[in-house]
Length: 155
Ligand SMILES: [Zn+2]
Ligand SMILES: [Zn+2]
Image 1 (spheres, rainbow, N blue to C red):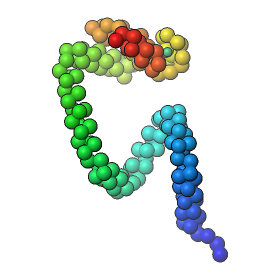
Image 2: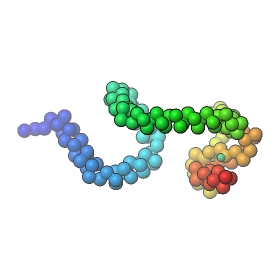
Image 3: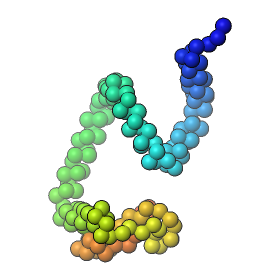
Image 4: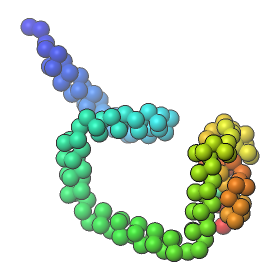
C-alpha cells in the first residue's frame, strides 16, 4: 500500500519530534546558535509563519498566558516601574534625544554607519557610542562586545 503525502508528512513530523525529545539539550543549543547566526532569516520566517497561522498564534499565546498569568503580571509591573523611573531621569532624556538624532541622520543617509568596529576593527553593524550625549553626532562606532566593555568600564 502506498503512503499518502499526508501520511508521509505526519510520519516525518513524528520522527523529528522524537529526535528532538531525545536530544533536547543539544537541540536547544543548536537552536540558540542557529538563531544567533541567522537573526534576520529567523525573524522573517517567524513573521511569515505568524501571518499564515493567525489562529494558531492566538491559541498558543492564550495558552501560554493562561499558564503564566502571575509571572506575566509581576514582570509587567516591574517593567513598567523601571521604565517610569528611567524615563523620569534627565539622563535618560538626554541619552534618548542623542540616540534619536543620530538614528535620524543614519536613516536619512546624511550620516554613514561604518562597517566595522572602531576598536577591534571587526566587521559588524556597529553601535554608535556616545562619549558625550550633548554631542549626538560625535560617536565612536563599536561592535557589541567593545561597546559592552566600554559601558562596564565606566561604571
Ligand atoms: Zn569591537
Ligand atoms: Zn555606548
